Length: 153
Image (tube, rainbow, N blue to C red):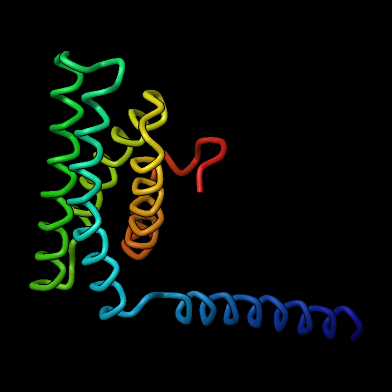
């Protein structure tokens, strides 16, 4: 009798915890309007970052090298990808592939921003973009390798 009662209680606890976590996830998911706004923010902030990043690279240790050209190309690519991701989401309400590509490019930029010790303006702009991109990536369940490094926001 006691075993049966404990079995019922255990089953009830498991069901309640599963139900509460499913409900919690549904409540924390971002709605389409907010997600579109976040993606617009990434797109809007990518342009000023691209310009600041290019200017800072001209004063960096890689100035005048093919590495500088490649780094500028990454920032240009990121800006284009942010536009493409937003457009895909607005048209199809799906943009997992575009967000994954953007996150991959962001990982490469993140390494450069941290290795080259660029201007404080670039650092601040990048942290803002990373924070926005993190929210977008989370909404699409896209993993961010650069988020796992020590000290990452």
